[in-house]
Image (cartoon, rainbow, N blue to C red):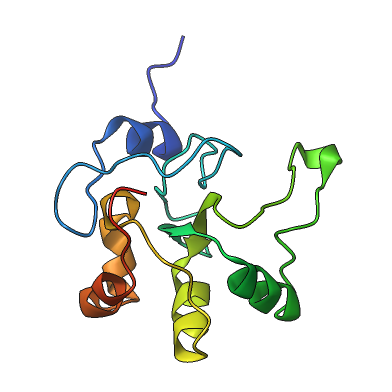
Length: 135
């Protein structure tokens, strides 16, 4: 029996921090979100999109991301994905959120549930500007 631990297991065992340098809070489980599909916007080196920004999606963002080629509102039952609707919480790629911000289409974020590594792509001031309290 091997005692080797995979990188994903190691990352899932380490406590993640949010952009406020506090313990990362859950983003959402209805539907289940996150790179690990555990409700948290945590990431690892295999996550090229960096799904680290916890958003409260709205119709504007859903339309925007659909126009960019990533339809998040259409259900994909073969993958257990019910499709998102306004008000759902979802871990969004940091680069896509920043792109949406620059185009005036960024959805609100939950700072407590955005992983700290999002700050490598998005300045904290922009996230704070779009933060919702306790959503």
